Length: 266
Picture 1 (cartoon, rainbow, N blue to C red):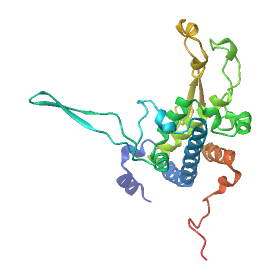
Picture 2: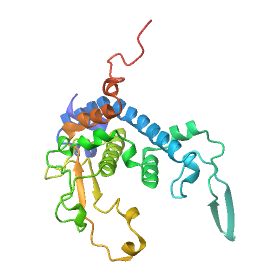
Picture 3: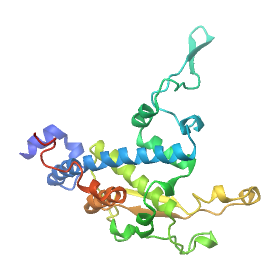
């Protein structure tokens, strides 16, 4: 494609966000290559979360706090007139009685599911324990670390390896960020000036500590938490997705990856 045609079709300002016009084209090719993998993971993970919570809590959606909104819920509007020219519309608590469990699971966003995992604290029940135990984030970016350093103010976390739930937290963050950027056709190859991947996730050393503390500990002045960052290099995106797929079932790595893109003819 001619350069002037490419600029006309995709806009010059957008193309400036890429190292080259070739990278812009390569980005679309990469998104096309990984879209089905992301889609499979999204379906599998939400089903896994639902399965875990059905066994652990039962009708878990009935126990969600108001801050976690369910897509598809009905709301009742109340109109309040505080002045002849000013009217306020208030919405009451959502009604989800008309939503079946299957519909509820299928219609929620990935952001919703991450909030659910955080609320019920089931990070370590989403992925295979063996996969989490053997996970090395250096696979996805050489400068990644698998433990908090000596700067942490939590004595028991100094040089301590990431725990299963912390690894799962980072994986879900990375997957969500990758999903959102891929499906909004953003530049997956983008790195900062120092070469650090734009696709990254972070976790504070005390993020999963609060629910273990007693009231006396919580009232003490808290030191500044230390954040650990994990990057996903563009060249490792496919490896990252294949690792996640394989952790659920090895067959998922090649699932729906055929060139035919459809069912076999009979």
